[in-house]
Each structure stands twice: as structure tokens, then as C-alpha cells.
Length: 230
Image (cartoon, rainbow, N blue to C red):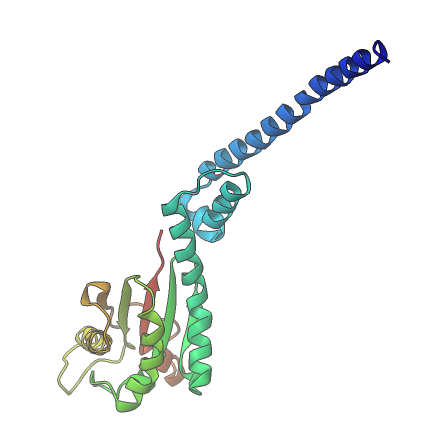
């Protein structure tokens, strides 16, 4: 026994020492994987990063998984992007709850969440004063937009029929006046003015042909966009 025991302990120690390389190797492979993931992320173009809205969130999760320190700014940006992605669904649900789903077209891409409302929903023909019904339609939209800090852009559009009478002499003036009316109402609803901007395009950016009444009706519109963070 006195002779056997030391030999067995010596053999076990040698085996344990030999196994330490596997732990080191595993750590090395993990760090290499993180390194190449970071290199890959930096190789992505800005547009690619925008299209992949889970980009920031994935890097944060990698840091958490491997015990690294989480970049507070990166984590905050990932959370903001998730909220931006969800706002379109929240507005759709809000409009459905208020039985207004058919009044607003909602489109979302890597740059913005865009809400399109036709002239008939917001204004009387040739005028820029919001109808009372328009305020009811805008209220649930504004309520969702106020929950985020992003800038909001309001764009006015008209058809190509010349203005012959009324307060505005050109379609350009009318489109800008309508955009401002919407901005004014949004501000009065409690949104910070520094978040708001407006543009009037007149007849210059139609979404369809102006040769039919249906086409002209689609071109007379207001677009409200929540601009996503880069």
C-alpha cells in the first residue's frame, strides 16, 4: 500500500495535467468565434446593418453568453430598434381597436415607419384645415408615436389638377399648408416640437397615375413617418 498509493496519485496528477489543454483549447475557440463574429459585423455595410434589425441585439447576447461586459450604449440601441420595429404593429392594433384600420396605410422599412392618410380622411377639397373626424383618426396614431423619442416627418402631397380658386394659388402651397396643419395638431397633442418636421411636395411625387379620379385621390395624401435610428 505505501508503494502503490503514491504511484496511483502520480498517475492521476499526470492525467489531470494532460487534460488542462482541453480547457484552454475550448476557451481559445470561444474567443476566436467571438473575434470572427465581430470582424464579420464590421464588414457589413450600413445598409446591411439596417436591414438586419437584430444586429445589435445579437452582439449584446454574445457578450452576455460569454461573460463579457455588455456595452450599455449597444444594449440601449438594440432595445430602441426593437421598439421601432414593434411600433407599426402597435399602431395597426390601435387603429383596429378604434375601427379605423381601413383609413390608414402602414408601411415599414429599415429607415422609417410610414403612415399614409388620404385627403378624404383629413381635409375637405382644396382646404388645409383638419376635419373633426381627422383628429379622431390621428389621435391613436400620435399616442403611439409619442412613446418613442424618434423624429417625426410629415409630408404633404397633391394631385396635378391646377388650383383655380380658394386660399391657395398652387398645389405646392396647399401641400405645405396641409403638412403644417398636421404638425400643429401633433404638437398640440403633446409631442415636443423639436421632434417634428414638415415638407410639401405638391404634385411632384405621385404614387400613381393622375389620369383617373381614383389615381388622383391616392395622390392627394399626407404621409407621417417615424424615422428610425441609424
